[in-house]
Length: 100
Image (cartoon, rainbow, N blue to C red; front, side, top):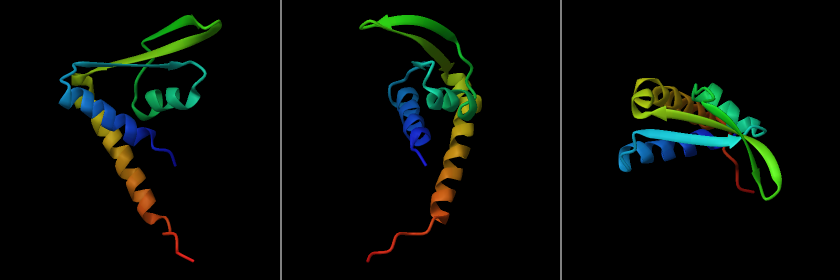
């Protein structure tokens, strides 16, 4: 089980609560299915834009996501906290390793 939700949640909270940001913008390669799934299914975000870019001779498509602090407070934060609680509960049920 990965740590994307915990890491991204912590980064977002830091941005809004510590840095005072009012909007967060995230972007990823269109082929990064894991990140796109996290944004779209876990956080409930919609693709805000797609751009074709070329970097160092390689072409790829960027997918961008954006949300405001109001969107965060009204829905996204609660959704991610529920996901994290499920992850924590799942980890608590896993057998603990034994020392040999």
